[in-house]
Length: 198
Image 1 (cartoon, rainbow, N blue to C red):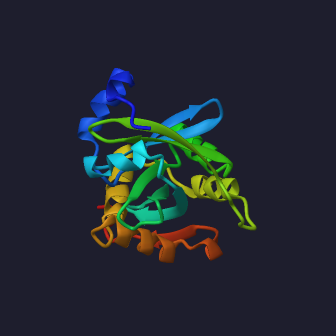
Image 2 (cartoon, rainbow, N blue to C red):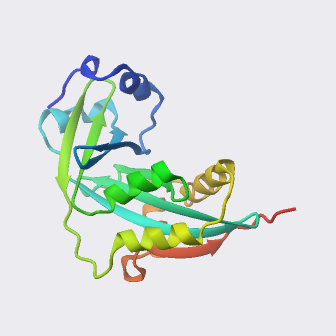
């Protein structure tokens, strides 16, 4: 259902104007359900009006060596309606307690919610997770967090931005992360980025 954005809290109304069409923004957990905000173009208002949205999500967990530090990061990508035209990416700093908690809640692999917004309206959608892996995603992000060093948040931002621009498009990033941290490797990968500490 396409609900008027005026019904949203002011902070979310303000966020709509600054969001792009490929980022996913964690909103925390409400009543045990982690929520993520995404924005669609107004051309896709009918998706909300017609309740015509399906979603899948895919985590990618990394330890990245950069500037002498070990960065612990988890990307989570959301793809709507099985379409490469609608891929949204969130990044979680696993050494940041709040972001780790948000990621932990999502990787419980039970339920999650999306706040899907356009400039014309919004809807809250809830999805069940059908996870068939033979490993515990919580163990994977905990392990990556333990390997991470005590880095400056600016360093995390550099690494997150650097990886998120691989390939140039959200579709390319989806395929890059799927190859680099595939489910056969428990969504985990380790790599080194070029810059070194002076």
